[in-house]
Image (cartoon, rainbow, N blue to C red; front, side):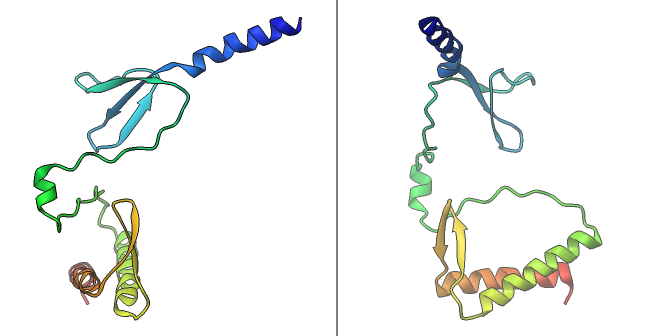
Length: 141
């Protein structure tokens, strides 16, 4: 009886250990994982075997063009928000907070390429200038 329960448990767990997984990116660049292929025709997907082990994501290889431009920063994916008074107030509030932090004397830490980095003086001035320009454009002050 005990052996049959162990055998039954192993048979039930076996499909979970090695499952077929599909990976694809949608039009917005979001990566999806599923046990079935994407429903939209023409979507390129990759068949993967799941071994039950989670591997950390590896960054994409650096191309020669990107390596020759050390100042090149990847552009973050942007989402478009409706221009409503509520969204405009949130943006202006966020810009005011960011400007106060950038113009203060405390260290400013930003998330870049998945790593937290402290801004040096030139990067801090560049970020403050960009935030000030956005504030003038969207908040009109």
